[in-house]
Length: 352
Image 1 (cartoon, rainbow, N blue to C red):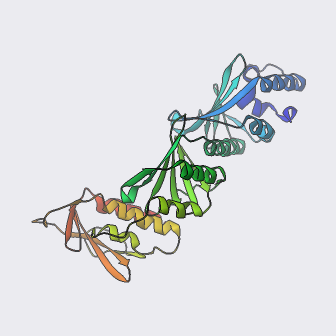
Image 2 (cartoon, rainbow, N blue to C red):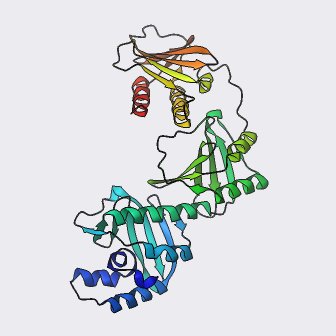
């Protein structure tokens, strides 16, 4: 396995002295390379990944070494350095009595020392370490778990039995290769804050079977058992809609943009029941509306209508009318800061 590693992988991960030799055009025989790879790998005692905000996750060393032979192919030395803002995380190989080997990893390039590598192999390398990092995140031991339901403005610390169930579900979570960036959390927006001996980990429940875990600039998605969502609804029960006219909109099955005002928008008819993506978009729209500030009485001058949003709830249509500084639903008025533009961009972008 180790002898199959060639110069490309060597320069990215394993032998910094070979990198230096290659840069100086020093001739290195295959036997020399094999011996140096063997020596370098034998010194590795721990492997971890550092996020861009300082979180460190240990990788399974045995799994890392067993899969290492599949890396290092289709790499191209690049004159274009990896930009700091493109770094997703940093791979660190700790060695016995030697300085760690450090690799900056982006989605399309990796940098080791002064050398940057691109090409299909760099993309594969990122995906591989990303997957191993996800496994490491799910293996973290919890000290306590705080459950939040953001749309309910409620939270509670889970009991040991409840936390044990959550930990079991997370350990069985299956990494999702798709980005799922379009999926917004469904009502009531459950979040789990998992406190461990290391930095806390945030888990967002996007749908009954999909969760996301941020890791610096990177985000991990996992498929989970659908019973998780049901269990969370027992821990923090979604309440019936109150007299708040905005909160009732979470139950909408359709949203229609009515381009009958001054703002240049398009008529859009959104079936919220089509998929969890449309449902999440609708719920996020309602969350944006909830940022409006209720007014004790209507404004003296509301200005011209910008456009209208029609929400179908329980067979009835409820209308949000936007003005430049205000919006109205039923008899309640709210002030806002360019919310009509934010919501329109949000809905329009989701249609592309």
